[in-house]
Amino acid sequence: MYYLFVLLAVLLVSALVLSTVKYGRFIIWAKAFRITVVSLSLVVFALLFIRKSVSQFQKNSLTVQVVNKLPFPIDFYMVKINSGADPDDKYEARHIGSIRSNYYRIEYIDMKNSDEFWIAGLMGKKDLVYFSQHSVPNKNQDQIIEVRNYIKQSIKLADIAKTQITAMKFENMKTAIWITLDFLLLFLNIVLLVRKSTKKSQPEPGFITVKN
Image (tube, rainbow, N blue to C red; front, top):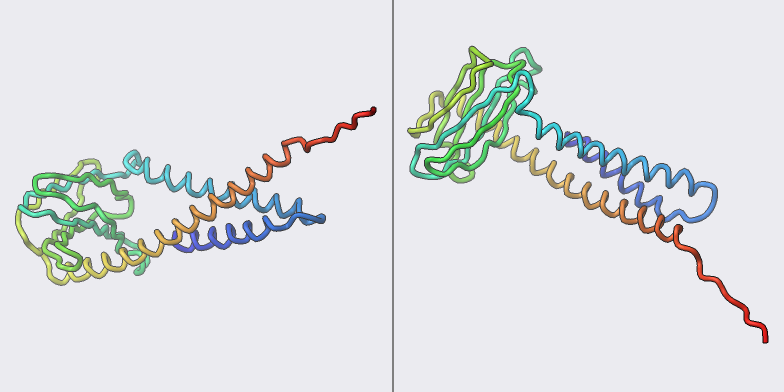
């Protein structure tokens, strides 16, 4: 996804550059390219929004409810273990969110190629205070996880989870920067397209000659 947003940024910058073309035969091709890039960008963001919105309705979607029974807020993360996947894609980390004491969060995960996930809790930015493994023998049965103690079921796996969470944070930060840039470039392109279309639709003022 990161490289997709980088590509969109390059295309949107190119569209802005082509907006300076005002004369010659190339103006038609330039405008067609700009409209195509803007339309493609809108489709990509629409699909991304739909994908995030309908994740809970997927066939293999598992509902996981994480309840914080500890006296302090904990920042929770989930690491899904993909079975039979490429080594680089074996671990899939995601941020559940910061959960206050006696509150919960619900996460939906696709378990089509997985039968295990981990829950990790951080206090502060780097202090991992909770880690647990969870197998999924029945993918149609939702799970409720109550965090009552500061435990780490496996120090070795907890270190792997922490590494994956750190990498995920870095990737999310880079992606967020490019998404913000894409939105700005998309807005500028839309404004320029609409403004020029509005100017062309307005009739030019004429002059009336009065004879004495």
